[in-house]
Length: 130
Image 1: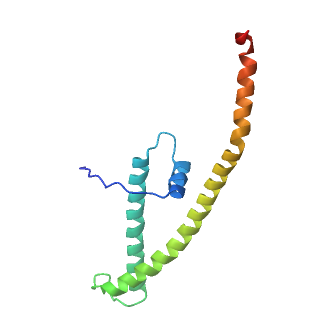
Image 2: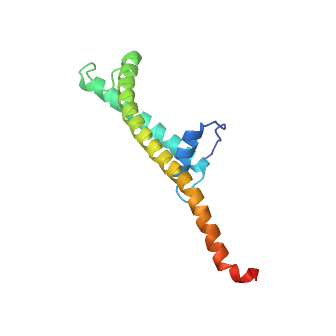
Image 3: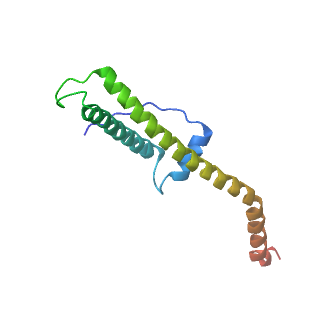
């Protein structure tokens, strides 16, 4: 399969930190972005299929082969998309809050951990100083 590249894009700090918090070991931002794009394309295809099937099941079209009015399919697509976005936004907000809390906790513990590491190093290498 021939590959093409996407242009670079900017992220705000919170989103970048959230992404860093969910990357698997060895996973790059580029591979994460490709997976996210593939997932979004698949999700939108599912939404379009759902919107079309909702229109068909609502009896607006006798057969799936009938032409579907673009305005109707767009409206159904938007309703389905809004519903999914509300759910996704709530999940994303919760994940982002959790990531930020972990980062904040890590920052709070940092001075104590640094002090403990210094103390341990001094104890372990005390005999080298004499």
